[in-house]
Every structure is written in structure tokens, then in C-alpha cells.
Length: 108
Image (cartoon, rainbow, N blue to C red):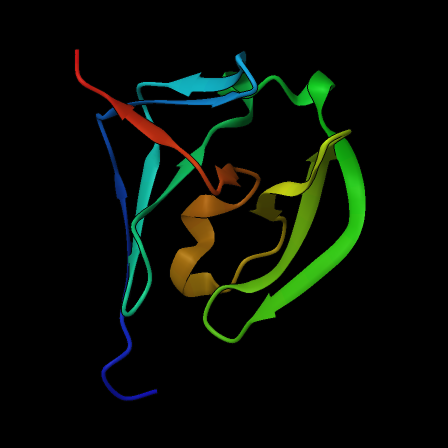
């Protein structure tokens, strides 16, 4: 689509995800994805996510620019996090990284 751009860069921000007082993820090495018309998203390496707390969901979504996303949930928060397991070539760096809707940037 004309005028639509996506960039993925290695970030140095300190980010974390807390849900109902429980730390789900914390990273100082997020991938920063910027996409036309969308909020900045932080994709976190699996080592920085408490994946044992998450349950795979049956939900999927398709983005014509990034590919097909899979989702994970908490008991009280369906589809809280997603990842692209086979992303399109333009965003291949985010493969296997987790993205949350509510990621907080921490001021160190």
C-alpha cells in the first residue's frame, strides 16, 4: 500500500508488562516496531517473558504487512499477547518475539 511503512529496530528502552500486579515481562532489549497509523509496539524476546503464565489461544489474526499472528491469554485476559511465528520478510526480526497491548516504558 502506498505510504504504508514498517520499521523494526533494536531498542534500548527498559520496558515491562504488569497485569493485575503481576510482572509478565521485562526487557532492556525490545525490538521497536513502528507502523504507519499504529502505535509503537515493543516485541520482547521470549527469554524476557514469563511464558509459563500464558496459555495459547485459538485466536489468530492476519496482517497484510506482517503476516499471521498467534495469541496467548491469562485466565482473566484473553488474547493479551501475540507473536508472529512466520512473519513476512520485511519484519522477519520479530519472529518468535512477544508483543503486549499494554507495555510500559520504564524511566531508569
